[in-house]
Amino acid sequence: MQQLESSPVAASVAWPMRRSLLWTGFVLVHGWLIWLCVNAVGWPLGDIEGVYRPWAELSVSGTAIVGIDTPFVYPIVALVPMLLALAFGPASYALVWLGLVTVLDAVAFAVLVGIRQAPSRRIAGVAWWWLAFLLLLGPIALARIDSVTVPLVIIALLWLRTRPFWGVVLLTIATWVKVWPAAALAALVVVSPRRWRITLIAVVTSAVIVVIALILGSGLNVFSFVSQQTGRGIQIESPVGTIWMWLAALGVPGSTVYYDFDILTFQVVGPGTEIASQLMTPLLVLGTAVVLVLGVRAQRRGAPIDTLLPPLVLALVLAMITINKVGSPQFISWVAAPIILGLVVNGARWSTPAVLGLVLAALTQLIYPYFYDGLLVPTVPMVLVLTLRNVLEFVLFGWALWALATAHVRRDSSGDTQLPGADFFPELVKE
Image 1 (cartoon, rainbow, N blue to C red):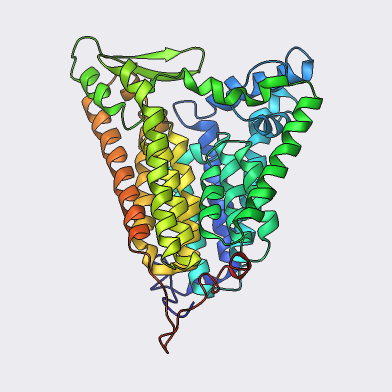
Image 2: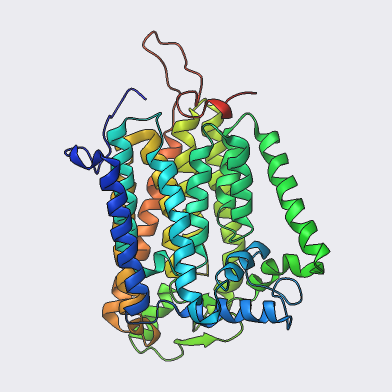
């Protein structure tokens, strides 16, 4: 960690390094986000009050426990925070949810600002970056099930330095809340010599979760989140859906937006959407495989783990976002975890993804909740904003792929090869 003593955010200022100021910023940002969730137009609490709370109420009433008695669109552990938010009754459900997510963010923030293995100025800069990202992303940063997984993944990735066992356990649990953290697990298996131990920990943790669900009577419903995704159409915010969103906005007959009451989301239909929907899943598998091959290639060339892991996680996450028929505003929140890891480990070399992440967050808040109606009845200005956001997702994806392709062996001043990853991930390089 000899290079780049400052992050792109904190390069020219030293005063924000005081932790009291960081925590003041944390409180102000989360207070503002909670206020937006309650008061902003567009009903940002829609999923919480209109979907999560009814699921939780059905479960505690004994009528039907989603994921146990009936199929569930999410992995089974997603039900846990939904039930916890009901602790003080239905009337306070949304506020308890927002409080729960704020506490999780606070724990992740504490883990971040408590890191001692990187320059304090850099850590302060990363912390300010995350607060700026949350502020720009808006109410969606707190008001979805993804809001639970993001801080869990941030904690897990930072724990990989000194607590790799618990980092892998936490990543596995997060994957059983929402599938996207599996990207970090896959990246770990690629980059670490301890890949078999990592795989074993993930498998055992998953087995415990599945066994508990089976004991509760889930049967195959514990895996229903997989089958629930296969019948989806093309969601309006997905990059592939942009084609038909333009056709609908320009009034071309046959292309329109509709609400799918089974999946509870807005989708677009038009000439060729059925074929495109069928092709997207194999394309996602192929795209993910290509990213993994690039990661394996870099690992075999001796690229250090601290250089390789952050862009590999970012590339896998962006593959799940860009090569996907599903697209929701909260998906952008996923990129925060790998960008934070990249900034902590590699500093200003991650300036480009840091800036792109902030722009993506700002465009996403503009789209949702404020002007979402301009997509539901597609208008040219809002489809243009959506197109810009989706194009920048590919730009960030391209940067991550470039970082993988150019990852190289690090050598010390004498020209000898350094132990890959020993700088920041000493526990991951042990055989």
